[in-house]
Image (cartoon, rainbow, N blue to C red; front, side):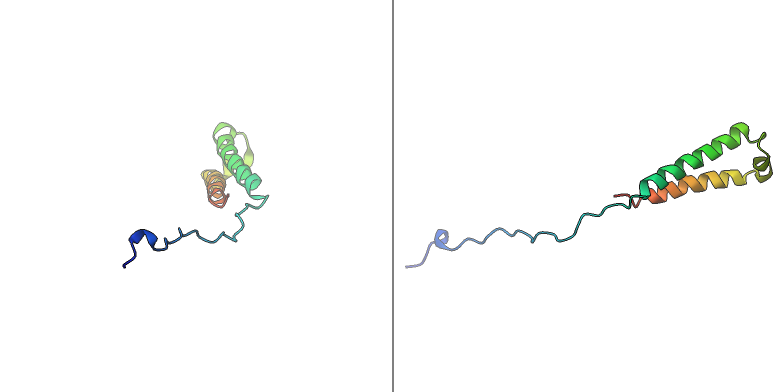
Length: 84
């Protein structure tokens, strides 16, 4: 007599093996450098616009001050992509 479908062995549900990877951890220096470069970049641009005419070296650099400030901000954004 043929066996019914209920008598057949049911397949076990697939469970993937446990992951052996450790969770990624950011280096301890990343967050302070990221926040520091962001703050320094914003402060540099702010000081240039507010008191740039009274600070001798800022008068000489003209729009290079914007490049310096935005470089700090861009560095902070790049570092923030590496934060886990």
